[in-house]
Amino acid sequence: MNIKAYLPDPLTNMPVIVLREIDGERMLPIWVGIFEANAIQLQMEGVQTPRPMTHDLLKTVIDELGGHLERIVVCDLRDNTFYAALHVLSPSGPRVVDARPSDAIALALRTGARIFVEEAVIQSARTFETSQTSRNSMDVGRLQKWLENLSDDDLGKYKM
Image (cartoon, rainbow, N blue to C red; front, side):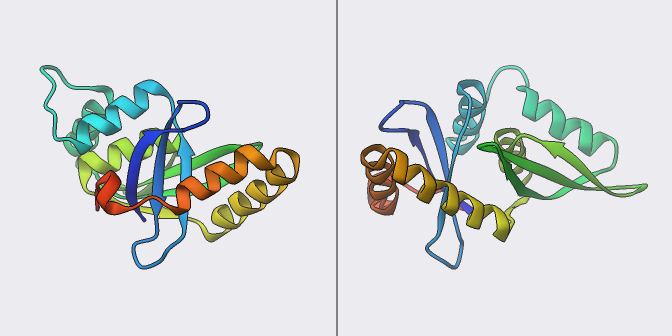
């Protein structure tokens, strides 16, 4: 996956990171917190902060311990909450560390790690969208249409 866009949800104004298949058309919106969105946006725009941000610190710790972030995986969706895992190659062997998707994405941007989403998560998210549509068709329908109409020219694009 790559990051298709970072923008506010048109209904709630909450930050949304939209992931898109590299060789496909499917997209996955992930709502994130304001601080995590800021960390992602700063890295996407190449802004250097005077002191290390938390994700910069984590990257440095992994590097200093001889590790390497190989990839991040959005691996689960439970109770409307996404879960992710950091796949770290360390001198003592591979490690998988639980993480929030927003933190994992912020770290992936800093390390150049690839972003993956489990197929089951994409399918679960679609099921959730469908079930939500029956309860609130106007809002979800409008959001779905908005996501489908995102264009690279309108929003810019950040590729991993």
